Length: 310
Image (cartoon, rainbow, N blue to C red; front, side):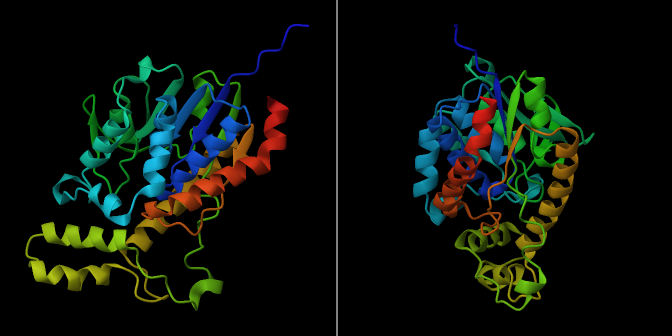
């Protein structure tokens, strides 16, 4: 009898900042299991990892992520307070270019779309043509952190504001079996729950501290010697006093969690992967090995169900 053709597989990679490095582990484990997506759609960090996959540069991104020091991560944070965010994003684009993730989307063999949000209308935008690094740059424009991107006359921000886990995009691009990765399922409330209220807050990461020092260094009226004094005030000091990044990250988590639950209820994937990444903060890109390992573990746990659809 002739072999049966496998269904067209779609992979929806969700938003989640540094936690999105788990997507690398998800892709590694899927490929090792013989499950290679035909359609890849990503939001925010999911767009970045998805772009590396369709461009054939996942190994390069993994190597960079696993070996990056906090100093290398900080170099990507080109602070520009006058452009609608703390980080301008040019250094991130430069990293993608150095990794070879820079060809037109339509030149790759797999269907790809990066999801962004139109800042004027609030509508989601599917970026399916043009340079892939420009699409990724728009999709990762996290409000309050990365400045908006101007694409075709529209100011675009992070796709997590409108479609945090782009299952609908995969389906529209022809996927018959959709695997979705939700990075934010176990985050809401973890930072301020009653059980942890009495525990001391972990020391701010070097990345967070350096980001605020560079931000303050560009602020008018702040003398160079004052940055080291002011920066710690923006970071958490005790369990009862959340810092700037705590408030911003937790607020975004709450918003994206509500949007994700609503979207997934109306547009459920065939298989939903939910890595447990509550220990990784918004900017903790130096925890790549931990995130990648959890992504792999999540796929291994779901393999029986995945193989049923193959």
